[in-house]
Image 1 (cartoon, helix red, strand yellow):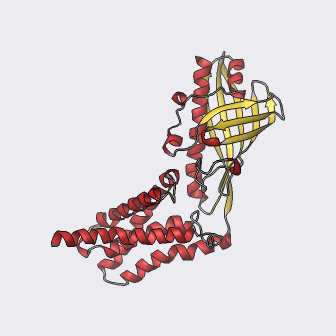
Image 2: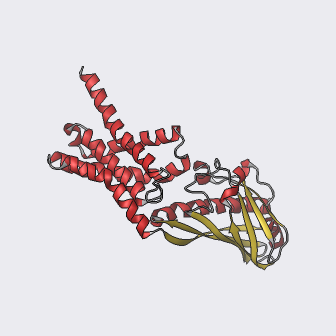
Image 3: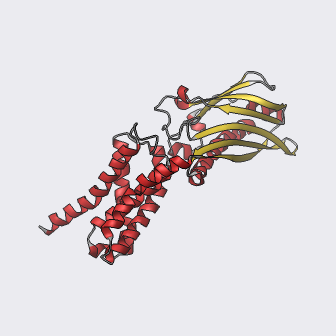
Length: 320
């Protein structure tokens, strides 16, 4: 009987916060509510995990809550279950969860510890839990009123190559098809992002049009705006979201979408010695969220991973 009771308690500890999180997710993604609420808000991404943590501890036995480690770590179980449910029902993608998981775990622990403080004092524990659960619904409309904060960022990478400038430049301007075996982008693989396939440039001059083709139907349309043969090439980058199949990228992180876009890229050759060059590849991208301080970290990692991957392929082909 005791085992059954404890089992039901564990189910309740997990089920209550997960159900509340799923209802919040449904509310925040509702078409009629997205003008005031949305997943890409501090309200949802910061408030929901705090509420989950608070509810987890509110439903838990007081004997367990005495332990700080329990109060900090038990909410992680509810977050993981919530993640699994959204993946099973395909309401969220794996890539989004990889980026959101550190935030959810950290904030669910904070919510659990706050709830622990009041539960042990037997004071306002229900009110505190309800405030944390309702916090996203109060914060998100305020964010909408303030508006998103556009930010521009730079991803800078380079690699040293032992090869003549002409050979390097030939592989820079036109990238032959990259087989999966040469793909070294570890982060984009984890996030299940499209990988680079090839790039084609119609002419090596200002006004030249370059198409950088990725898997999943992702194509960057690039126009050369500055060109110095075997020295520098600057190009604008345009990805049209309507050209990208919905199965390729999550709508919240699609390139060229509402929240994230790549603006331009630059290749530069810096001579270090005879037939020895440092190839610089950097790009500028923009974010349009209320939490650019967090999103910019992940966006920078992703862009540098893509660029490092391309530079590794370039080095391999030039030095072969």
